[in-house]
Length: 560
Image (cartoon, rainbow, N blue to C red; front, side):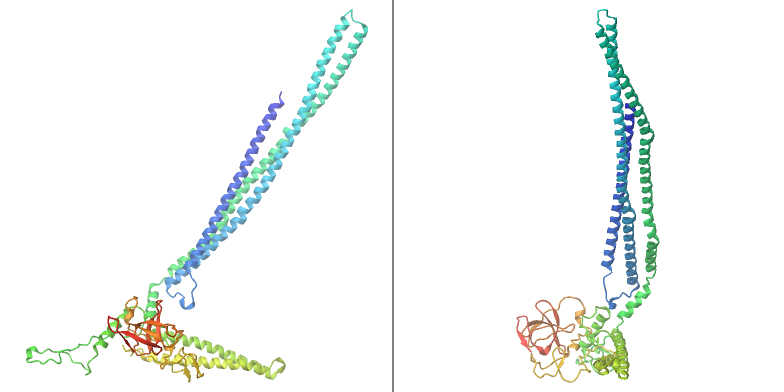
């Protein structure tokens, strides 16, 4: 039997190729999984970078734009880092599209092709096995017929040599021999035909069909290997394409680092906090021995004289000078933000007023341009009535003119404040600024909240004294509250006689009959500093409240 070993050899090789091709597809899918996890890492990395940039680069207004070179460079680095995160996202997207997606599609095609080739091999094997069974059956039949013919031949020879056998028995044995011999011949011919057919099919199977199937499997496996090499290259090309942009991002970071200028930052600090105040003068000598009589020259004490002839106020001289030091080297005053910026140092006040004048001038120029455009359009309508009604533009023109007057008034008011501060920058002393009223306020009765009305009857009673909230309490420029951030102690309490809206910065909203704690007395400007039970602090008009100050530790109070 020669066929069985050949078939067994084929079966072994076919199973080996089956296992190898399955391993190749498994390896391809494993690499696909690796690429997927890699792009997920890139996506997470890019997302975390963007979150980091957003965390340290919050939204800010124009006034809060960084001016220091170190801050500008840091925000530039954040922008470059954001671009870098974008490139990581590009890497993840390209990997997902050109590598992972392509591998998954190719893996499906590879599985279908492998399944088809294996089915063809199994069909060829089944057909060869069927041919072999047919040939084997014809062979066994031929063997049986030959044995039967041999038995018939022996029986015929025995009867032919037997003298006692009848002629009919001999003829019958002869006839039986002929039939068996004829059947054996037919079986022989059938076996020869099946054998020839099987040999032909076996030759085709091992020399044509199976080699072709094996070649197809080999081509498929080679294409898989080539595809892996291409995806390896694509995997690297995706990174290589973003390297120039990433290099530019890194170069931008280096450029931002080189742009840091310590002298420029120091100049900005000096310019920002320059107050315009003069340095404090010398402490005057205070002579308390003038009323003492001296009996001898040895006991006479020589004291410097006051050149001005006026005895200085010890409280004013010492406290104000000491507080001057606090202003120069202490914390920024916690004063309400006033319209004329009088709560700021002279130099800072001048800058803020100048900036406001420039902004108002730009707005005024826009209104002027709009007025001119409306007048030109009105002239066109008057010359060509079919284009429009000239009177329809009059309300808009009037509104524009009104806006222009308001802006001019605001500019004039701020220019007067600017002239005042420019005239006092070099002569400003340690005296406490007075709380002036608004010189540009229109004539008429002023409401407690600072709005004007001609209505005689108001919902709330008007107090005897109504300070302008826009000129809210301006604390002493050298107030002791600058020393630290500890809350001020309670020195009394008050009851609100009227409601106060407290719309301006630094003022405190209060309702009628509300009880508040006093933490700072009125210093002559019409405002008292108070604190609510909730802890909220601010200034309220002194004339709006009934104040009870603590007189001694036992709790006796004095109403004022």
